[in-house]
Image (cartoon, rainbow, N blue to C red):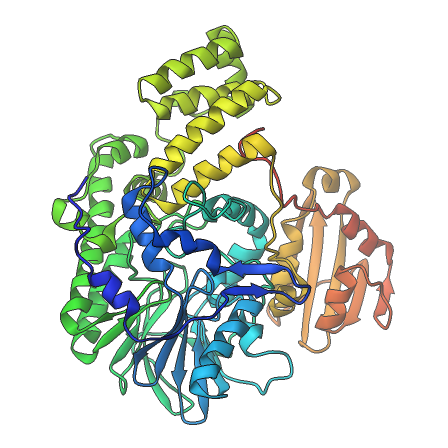
Length: 607
């Protein structure tokens, strides 16, 4: 481990610079009065680091916990720590442009209200999404509510497609795992949740989405919003599949989105996502230095705190450029020597000059799981060993291990010996087998929970800590309820009709559908000038939009002529009122009966 300079207070000075006011109390509720954000719960971080936390992660929690409205540059302000991400506000000629409106409409509205309390009741005149993750668009309706005058909504090309694929198609599974990653159900306490490295935690309010109206398609593209000039750098495949940095040349300020923050980021996030390209990530950071270093006085991002001055900007970006390049290139070098991802992760270390930088510490991503992600990107899940090609699934494997050890009691005794020897990692492996072999065994679950707590308390990585401690909590008390809903009507209304069809396809119960045969259904969208045919065949639902080159052939078993809002109502079970129906309405009932309902609270630490 690098020698960390805890006496260096530069980050604390930057995190406090430009402070105007905090939200007091820092508690935000939804319309029903339910608390969806409680920043005051982290007051304990003002104290000394206890034995139940890694000192480096505790320091990061103290920095991320600084809350309120801050001045970044002339006409540029940030609201920090009213959600996982920052909301940035850029003042224009007529009002204010909002960059990244947080996760929830409620927190975004509170952030805007805090800004207006100190800068005047300026109208929102533009909205910018830096990238396609939910903490950067979910609060859109909190700043541009229904009935608001239309405003330009800028986003990188491909934004909507990637926002939907991550938050809708696989949204249920990712949301469940995000409970572990962000420690959503853990108590905020020195022995509980102390942040996640990237911020404190996620809000649990209403997720919304306003589709973009202006696509940023290439680097160098210039747009003017409310009199404010903006120059864009497109950075696809970095921290998100669709992402962009952008310069405000007249303010000498740059937004680095989530491409350069004060921690090592994820090449593959633990909640699940498409594996990111750390090679291209490093290249875009290098390009940003070349494009912008001589044109800025301050760099801010969608998380954490800004840095001021050319040299600080270059130091941050160059350090992270070299870090992502190093972990990418060295992983491939060792892969080509025959090592597997797990072996490389155990062996690889950053050079001291990179490792000792606070901004490269693994608070959110980690060198260990990022190395495995690079390996996965190039080599896939299989390490080449035939023994791993057709292994038993976890329960069957656990039952065999436990039987061979002589039963759960023998496994517990053996695991305790590893605990006493300080090998918590293998103790966790043995106890996990015991739990999966006998999920009702309270002694096994309690022993594993104890080990997870010890691993969590020692972790420098915030998401590892949250995974371990949430696992311990659920072993003792069962799964908590997932509050975040990515499939709500507000989100659905932002999807294209093709995306709506795709979201149905991933919910089809294939085996049941294969038994009943097939059908075709046409959706004629009068307000979209679009005809989509859904074909159910061999258990698979395939949607296709008719084009001049590939028209639909022959009539469908059922044709619905309707608007997109009517379609959403039909799919929500509101019936076929005022919908033009041709053919057999039973087809719709058949489709509805084949849709699987996702389980938002599925088990993770027990089978």
